[in-house]
Length: 619
Image 1 (cartoon, rainbow, N blue to C red):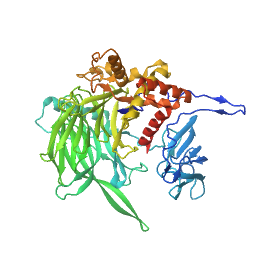
Image 2 (image 1 turned 120 degrees about the vertical axis):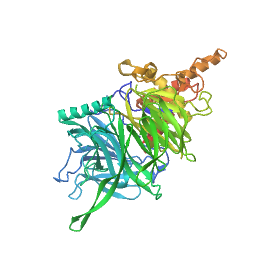
Image 3 (image 1 turned 135 degrees about the horizontal axis):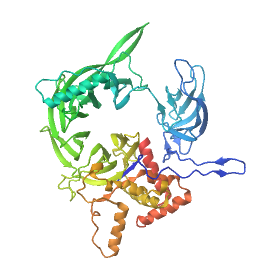
């Protein structure tokens, strides 16, 4: 079972309507929904007694402008909550904005602090016995949903890649650049391609400028450009389509080297072939003498290797000391000998590789028109072996791997704005001995997913679990997380149907119908060709099974067989349970218990399930 939330919610606002209750003394209280877990179950956390917390009012806390020595932004006011899960409650935009502070663990006390050595700062006392005098980072603001620090790039960012050896951040950006002559084309090519190449060069020359791509190296903490460092520009007409920090094993010395891999593609019209390049940079630390006995370390990039490919380089990934590249329809694995890349293995997909992810000896590859491919690397033979694939032919725009202990769940997004969950089950009767990936769930989010990132979860047990953080082209974020407790998964599944019928939704729109919109998206609109039976929600399948048993074992309707139920839970919908009044929570829990077949469900159990999931994602 998977829980998804964060993007494309049809039900509108979170929590309940704000209710003001006038009191005889003239005061009024307002109930605000906050995206924050105020406590953690357990007797004590790192010496912090359970339930011990205090609230401290703060005013005039802001970041300091080093150039002027004055306040660099608006003064922040609010309340700091000490305890096992400390949080800043910042007053702004007519509400309280929570900003959890987990970096120092449990906080016993906090107070604002302002003097000549620490203007506009504060002091915190951790339960570990340490006292820290702190200031807000430069350009940091608390009056938004997240702690925001903006850095002007004056360009459009496309990709990010941290380089942890030097605490650096590589950013691929594009901006208008003055015209640069294209490289001369090699003779003997196709006349139509040569004409398209010359036409693209002539159009840029006539306009006097063109959109150019470059890679900038910034400081990871301050996001400021590095001194003595120039942007890494690519050729005219090229776009940066892959950027990643990779760790390659040098086959000549058996040492591991950290490099910055940059993949490019050139699109000069439909009559000219789309080509690509791979550039490998090494960040070198240079110590400079600033005078007066002070030294400074400056990181400068050095080009180690570059190679042309007959297709666009869309993905770059390190894998067991090798370099994995998505080049057009191919997945290529290269080894590094200290001077050049040597191809060791490859795998062919039908059209175009859009994403590439690895875990241990396995790879997940997404194709732009033919779905997912699950591949294993056989080290003895140095071959990439196909284990299973998706036969529904979805247009995969992004994909990722959700790890739930010993299970690998494959989540991908198609061009129609739908999330789908698949699994490799060799012994499943519908998997054709593992050749076909089993569809386990689908949830429509109505957004174009562009990238996925795996995040480790902090659960109540020691099992290895990873959630998936999704980003969309519209600037949204979403989580897909595994539900490790089968009983909690059953409770939340039964709860979402009750909330669909009981809650008031924006404009009367049904969130269940919105999440199931993927069943009506055609292939030209980004949907997929469905060769398998359509998924049925678990509560509907349970009701059908109960009705069939009551009628004497009638045949099951198509799509309600083994593995044909939709196991994805709408996180946006079930999270609204926490904002209901106490009496209504009890009623909803009772109705969910009845839908589950009479299994007792209490409001405390549901709140505990939601709290545990929130803690696992935010610790």
